[in-house]
Amino acid sequence: MNGLKFLLIYIIIMNVVGFFIMGIDKRKAKKHAWRIPEKTLFLVSLIGGSIGTLLGMYVFRHKTKHWYFVIGMPLILIVHIILAVIFI
Image (cartoon, rainbow, N blue to C red; front, side, top):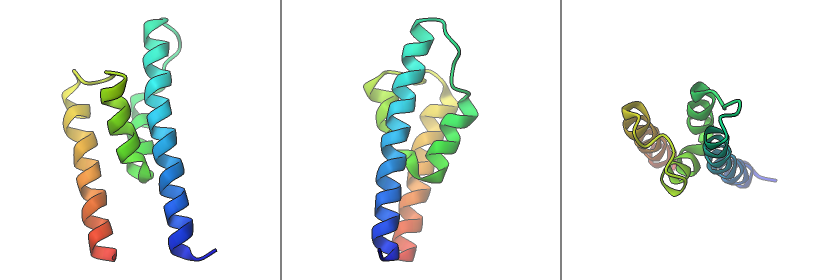
């Protein structure tokens, strides 16, 4: 498997993970259960799941009142796009 194909698969997996952890955390919040730490949500976004976590934020309406998520998640996505353009 070449590097580009591996990277694409990795990005897809991380975005699916990012989307689902936002949904899981929202469900846990509604049930007043143990939550996924915010630093974990940001970490998944930073390591390649920025599109998934951003989509999850708005699909599940989760963390949309926290300024650091509303600004931070799109900012991480912008950085990822810039890095992709530089490396391609």
